[in-house]
Length: 236
Image: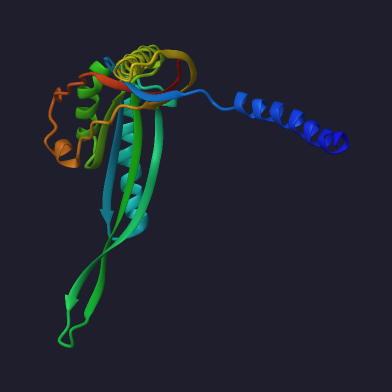
């Protein structure tokens, strides 16, 4: 009888620690909440996109005319205090322009009438107060297409830190409310993840450049930086 009971007793002795070990590895109850934080700051950089388009009978003539106009725009930017590192060519396009004539058989006949050359320049203005004057000079010297403006910050780290703190505080407040409603207590923080949300650029379209005049009115406003966090808490 003893011979048959001994293996069973040994098996039980091995199984019970295994079950206890499995129970110890079960993750504790937890709660996952999200939080949002936002902080604002006045922009200190204006990003401009300026385009010059010229048209001529040949591609060579259109390119030469465009080169002259863009050279004048770049010279004006430099004279206004824009550094070389803040001027960057964003693209050059050469496109033929056709006139289309409808024929009696329903087809169309294409006639090449000109070539259009567009040169786009990205300008970083580090003195936001000069943005209006720079726009006026650019239009006066030949900027006549495209156009865009976006206000940003050279170093938004401090503002993002402020937003991140607010997001974590928001998550903690939510977790406390949920735990209280569920009649449980919050334990330690297990995990935190975050995601920065950049401010949305403020566009200016080509029509705004058409209407540009001396001292173009420009309002920089404020940039809003948002942070979203996800926090995981243990429950006690």
